[in-house]
Length: 320
Image (cartoon, rainbow, N blue to C red):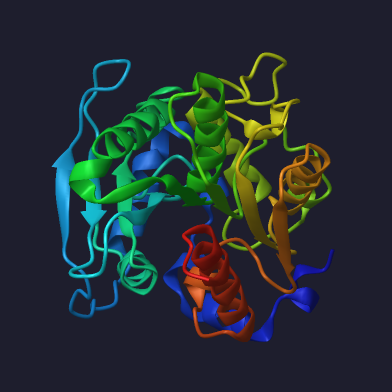
């Protein structure tokens, strides 16, 4: 595929002007992951507007391996409890990012949906490979469910959501919750989820894919798994595309750009969910690479994507 010819013009212009467009994540190695983090930290950040809902940080109970992750809880003032809950998992290729910074999108969801939003801070690879990040995500979800009365949450309206690696963790978390039978999820919202370590699809070979390339994908999976990806014994909780039984999973939204290396694995996952009887909504956005709606939120295709996400969350939380 000719990326340059198919890239949305508004996104192309934004990439040319953005610091992220100049970072070749695939040029890094496991030993130089800290340079990725330094590069991300050095990027200019827009000034945040005043918060529209209050938020607080909470250290939750220790998970299965003794770590105690932190969550940021966004709770609207007023309204009526019990509320729906959106449990958010941030992206970053399993290598970087944080769930504790104030996030205007999460604030907006809390306000517009009259929902409690919980954002989890999970340990990052390569220092903490699988299963540590998933354990942290489950510990945060378990804490949220256990404290539903204190938080004013309706346990029947808990949505797990994530983008990129966070989408992969969200999908893995949905599988884990289903199999353990301890927490019932109402919905999973997966934004271009990173779910297949094998790198064998046609889209995984897109030459010149912006933002997150085939090489970057290999690096992320190598760090997360703690070994070379693509082997026969990678568990489905780590790479959900490997799961053969998708029955019993919650209703699902999947959105991905047609220039994203994750395109085909995400489409295939949606088709298999539908085949397993799981109501699933799939959107493939033309001219869009990985992370497009964050790179240029005002682009037409990004506005459509965000509208689709908001509409799906409104239905999942009972606001529509």
